[in-house]
Image 1: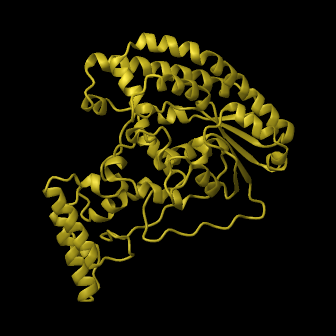
Image 2 (image 1 turned 120 degrees about the vertical axis):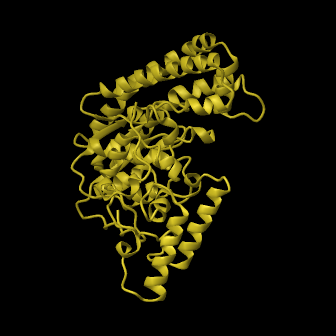
Image 3 (image 1 turned 180 degrees about the horizontal axis):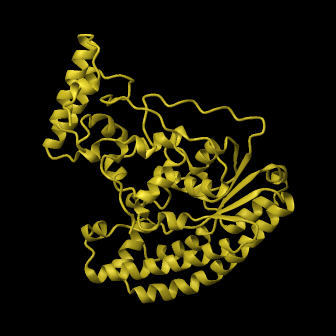
Length: 398
């Protein structure tokens, strides 16, 4: 079982991930910057991300200092990746790439499975809705038997296609690093959520039976990737396993990676690339913008994997609104957060990780009336009275 980070872990400089009022600009690509090429499906095309959110490919480009070309397309199968490689207009792009990252195979299985579940869908349901309901109501063995027949040929072909993809890349570019990304289970949900959704013990058994079936199919694809000679494999599946709902949008009924998921994918890819010496300010911002309730659920090993690639910059204690200094607005915001907590709104659900780190000025693991008072005292003494005080002068000695 993955170990969770502590609630106030974000505030520790030793964590290697500290958030700032202003993140440094990324350096311009050097003349010898590597060329990063992205191939594959909706994971690599950024589906599910909102405007301004980064995909894993952005972080890979950040940390390698490379130039980025993304030829991924939502819905693409391994056959579609081969078609991209066979397209003469892409020949030079492929030949010039130093690093080629590939996410493919999930749609080879998802598309026939989706077609099957659509035959059982009720009006207004999406794929996850239908899969959850069928898992509750249906005969798991019967569902698996039917899916086995429908997925056998697509899975076999996808397994064969991984070697074909590598061969076609090598024919155009024998020197590029080729990195496959393993497929992950997009339906993994926490047991507490399923219980709250009305899953009985019997229903949970059915759900787990179906999840084991999904995982087994993913394993077969992933083992095939790992067996392709002359390539590397970023094991996204293992990284996501056990906490998948943190890294995709399944809780919001979407199978695509969340911003945090993209950060973890990037870390697994960068581990395979190696020799990167640039840290990503954008990834630090992504983690800092997580809700504190999500942040505290990140397993320690996943946090460590991500933090290796995150720029380390100082934040301003008490600067809740990230303006660069403590102002009366910060005091007011902290008071609002505290009073909302008193009225029953969970503080961790209503502040970001960076806000929590800056707002918990006394470092006791929560935002309390003491933090509001200390922030007000610091603001008045330093910025109103112009006294030359530090936080050491304000906070009680431990």
